[in-house]
Length: 162
Image 1 (cartoon, rainbow, N blue to C red):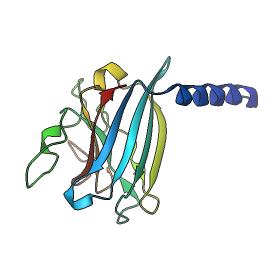
Image 2 (cartoon, rainbow, N blue to C red; image 1 turned 90 degrees about the vertical axis):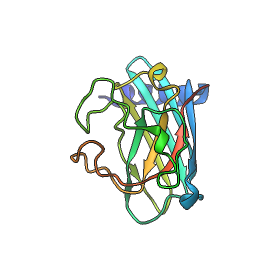
Image 3 (tube, rainbow, N blue to C red; image 1 turned 60 degrees about the vertical axis):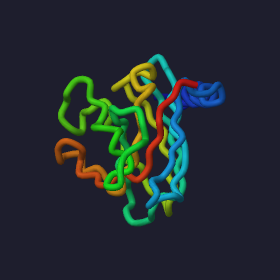
């Protein structure tokens, strides 16, 4: 890729971000992790979906946090699991982990803050509206079935149309 091609891609990315997402989720931490907040935005492109996440208040225990789209549409649960109703990872093709459509790159936890921006062709925006985004307390090992041994669900956001 030449510098001019990179400049063109960068310019298109900036324009897309300014135009606004087609779907988004507002993140909130569980009662045990009330300090977590942030947003995950989803942008349609010709090559897939750009996912842009900004998160603050993460616990500074691990350097990475598991990050997934889950099947369920509600950030509700019970005393044992505050986000139990999110169900399993979004996985319409019944793929093995880490090839679920909902398997996302882990968040790099930088003193409680994380920013992530990536392109994926595993789903389109319409397929994830009404689902949830989850942050886990541990990193995803990309091996253990079915969810990468990523630990407790500590934050959740419901994906809604913009």
